[in-house]
Image 1 (cartoon, one colour):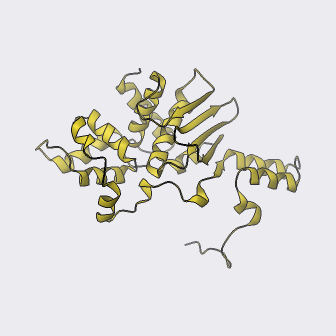
Image 2 (cartoon, one colour):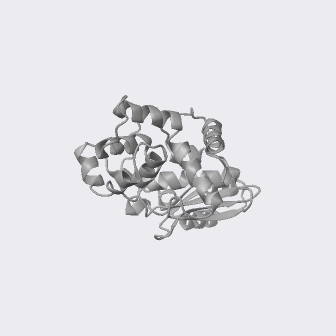
Image 3 (cartoon, helix red, strand yellow):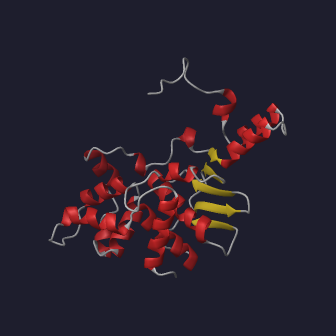
Length: 251
């Protein structure tokens, strides 16, 4: 396994490459869409697969299991970015839903994802705000505040906190229930803990959509074929112009 310092450096380099600093919380979905040749697919992939990455010379594809919680989807996308940028042993990777499982390469991708979403310095400062100089273990409420701040799943947060010595394994095991209720009581939006809405669980974003448009504008495909390609990508909204009557007010 690649050592943690190198994986942290890789995570920082990709953050900078995508125009972000090395410590702030990020909108990983927007960042991924800024990669020119990348197609993102969101689709329910069952219980055992979190995502997949397929690379070729001219374009790449990342699939994310949209039936998992949004927090887990964010983690899965960060995991797949490792395969996209650093995994040169295989042109395709299908990833298990179990964090910390699989071969050495999968463990590297998991560690990268954790550092990418929660840079060590930022996480240390956030933990220190709660612990002060006492060094006490974090409460469930404090952990929920942390995962909401970084936008990461509860399980991924617990695993990272155990790694950092902020929680014991026994303490983490005792914090597996009451998450949504506690988050609601703290006033948070609960979407981080839930799958994407049904109407958004199947969609394609990025390179594929742009390439279909380029083919149409170059007269290489008909309007009918263009619309067929979009419908195959679950983009009925583009084909049928689905929008509330009178349009949407853009502030």
